Length: 65
Image (tube, rainbow, N blue to C red; front, side):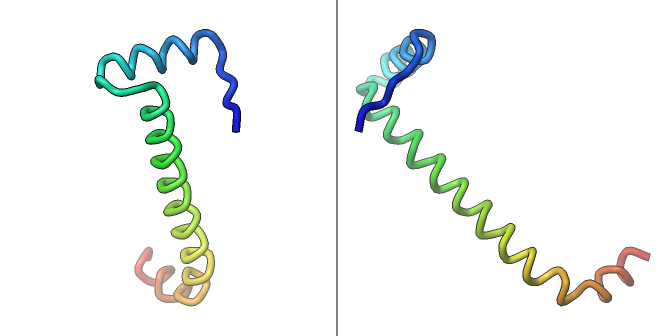
């Protein structure tokens, strides 16, 4: 896989890597892992809410009154 970054993205990644004492590759890989994990959790929550809220709609409406 080749990841193409703009000059400003490359510079930002370089600065972050230097600040953390890690390679640019390590920082990029961690960012990707974090993104995938966060997005996966959000999608799971959305799916559960889409399935469960209709089931409890009447009770939720009553609680909102």
